[in-house]
Image 1 (cartoon, rainbow, N blue to C red):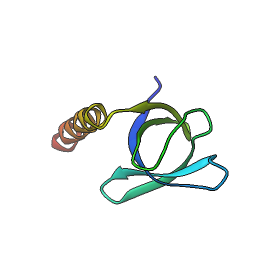
Image 2: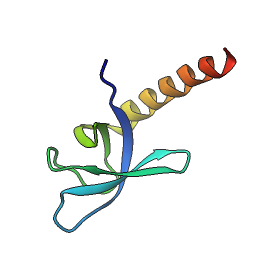
Image 3: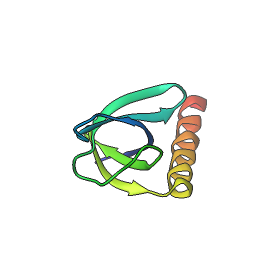
Image 4: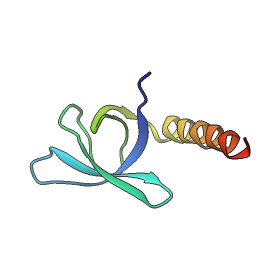
Length: 77
């Protein structure tokens, strides 16, 4: 099973190859953004260190809410 995580671009390097992605809850990581046309503030899906798709903010937040819901079930078990 493959999993892509949505996050918000907070900075992009000068070569426009890598960006710092904010996944929420103080989690930020670098990802390669050379496969998509992005700017700071865009939301992207990241899989295996690569941004593979640009999302609108509403879609990204809906997906993040689903992840949080799944994690809450795991914590209850």
